[in-house]
Image (cartoon, rainbow, N blue to C red):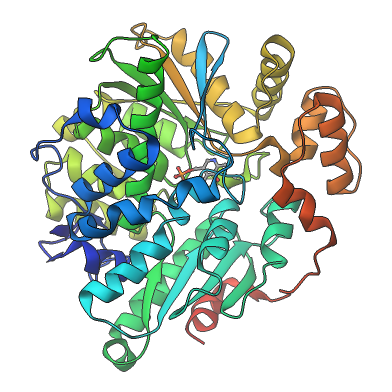
Length: 485
Ligand SMILES: *Cc1c(COP(=O)(O)O)cnc(C)c1O
């Protein structure tokens, strides 16, 4: 059983994957993750797909009978034999999570989420249409469209911030084919999109239709089925370090995670709770540094300017998954979590103190960086190590530098999660390494390829000649009605 972060409401994991979000507005969590035994060393000895099946079966036992089959899609969808290969970069490591169909880490979860949803429908005996509603800061949208297009019994609607994603991310979404897909730009930022989607859920679940006609679900990391597949690559990173003789079993590894909605880093926390020897989890933010402030002071305050940066997928001020961390940090105190969330929506802020804050600070470190530091990191990584970084990963490396000079660093090996291909953000990356971008994004990608001798990923090169199929743009106040239409 999984339970809501805001009450004792509990459902089976299969029902939770279908519902996406709990009826009380809370997120589903596994309340006894740290007490159920998990054989870490056995898991680390397995190849990626089997490792994934073990993790799926442990965290979502309702799917155990299908876990192997679900995990077997990875080699078909990812171009690297390791699925998520670990590369030495200077004296740290980059965990490359972007070798899937849309060139961002979101593919790791969204390649399998449609299979979890289809399986859950079968197990729960539900034959209603499932409508997926998704807000995206750039990468979730395309990965979800890629996963759900033409999947029988489902349809998908994606909202993205108008002018708030990279040109390549936008091209990926608006050219999406499929008979069951809608893509809509919103005149607002990611937080507006995310709030609209959450409001649509609330409105629909109170309506008379909710019990009878289609069922709404989410492809965002608010869905527990999105988080679980992301746990696997923390194990994979550790296993690759073991295989290469970089550590002994039991040695701790620190992970630096470029963070927006706190989903990816929370998956690291879940891996740690399952017993993987993780030291610190370093939360890396761009100039939207609401999480840096929270982790260092306990004050979460979203009332600040929303800044547009070169790492748009991290331009977020309301980090949904932090709610799950609050649940764990308060020892499962759902009243406390509810009151913090009420304060967040009423006042735009809340303050965490005492043992709950200490619990967070004992695991998480945090840092943020400026746009200049991102550019400098991309340049340094390329010129010193011949490793090409995208803008989000560069936030991670810039924060890694600061972390290593801080008092909290204890000398563990450090792995930076590399969340997207540099070819999704070619203009920023090309200028950082000394090239000159063109007005045409595809020409820029070619110049980046020429300069670095790294090929443009096929799925990105192919976009150039695809027709634009989606033109809708709505105002913030119209997201709910569009979502439910
Ligand atoms: C989504 C995304 C992030 C942030 O991940 P969260 O799970 O939202 O914290 C970082 N980098 C890239 C490239 C992303 O697409």
